[in-house]
Amino acid sequence: MSDALKAIAATGNLSYNNLSPDAKRGVAGAIALELILGAVSSAKPHDLENELVRLPKYIDQIQEALKTK
Image (spheres, rainbow, N blue to C red):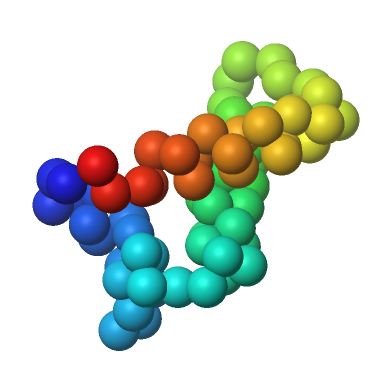
């Protein structure tokens, strides 16, 4: 795992991998919302409603990316 990914995965003194499943989902959800915020705040047009419909998919993708291989 890269240092950048380790930094993203750290939550306080707990590693992402040591969090409960609900906490992991919450971290992934927060990351996804930050990405959506960045997208809808950019100069390119984005539909917030469509992005929020895709939120569960984004969370799933982020959780998969944060799994230790």
